[in-house]
Image 1 (cartoon, rainbow, N blue to C red):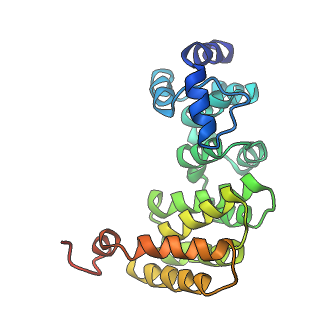
Image 2 (image 1 turned 135 degrees about the horizontal axis):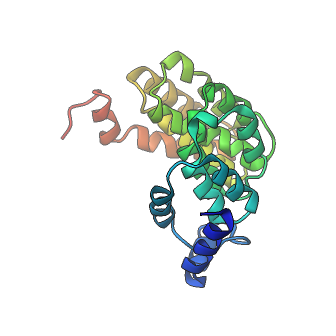
Length: 228
């Protein structure tokens, strides 16, 4: 199956109703056909791992083809150069998040990469840094000391008012607080500091994170209260 074959198949499966639904969720549909990630995952299982096809699909620029590329790419072929090339072209939050969840978390130095990206100014690169950090919290179950610097990144960037950034910052803070009882205490303390800070995105990040981190479900999972 060539990249052209795959793109044609995606186009045939898409529809305008789905595109409109994607647009309502803030997805950039300029180059989208309108197919679901579930459908793409099924197609990915049919194709299997294929690095050359993944690169060709990414080069096509077609929205869903790029998500599929992250599904079928060979993890052993992933390096920093490829990650940087792809992240520089993120133009929609769903492509960003899917690439982080499907592939980029497998980078050998993924935490270092995430921290680097959180300090960049480009909206979707910064988002990718925090999404990658959130994914790493449960994908790799990295040691606390390895993940802890992400708390500082959250503190530094929590005031970014851009919607796609602040939601990713919030996601990362919530996932950090679910890693261990110690990180939970540190994440809650940071959330409280953000809530007491100046008006803006930081207050929302802290308030929303603290609400989830103090939920019975999260506390029970961490062994901090008895499950009801």
